[in-house]
Length: 77
Image (tube, rainbow, N blue to C red; front, side, top):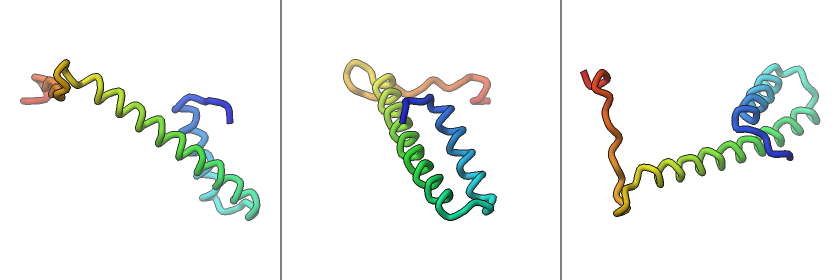
């Protein structure tokens, strides 16, 4: 499968779910859609895990300690 953006993969997964929920497709097509959906789901999960690791690296200071995010003054009130 060619590399697609996270957003495009998510949209395709939503299309698959919608199509399968309609219930008006033959079993063989349902199985193919299900297989495609599982592959997309795994790819999306992998992308999210990679993003989480990148964020964790960004919020660590030079000593390896996590830096707490600043609170928005307006949100704190």
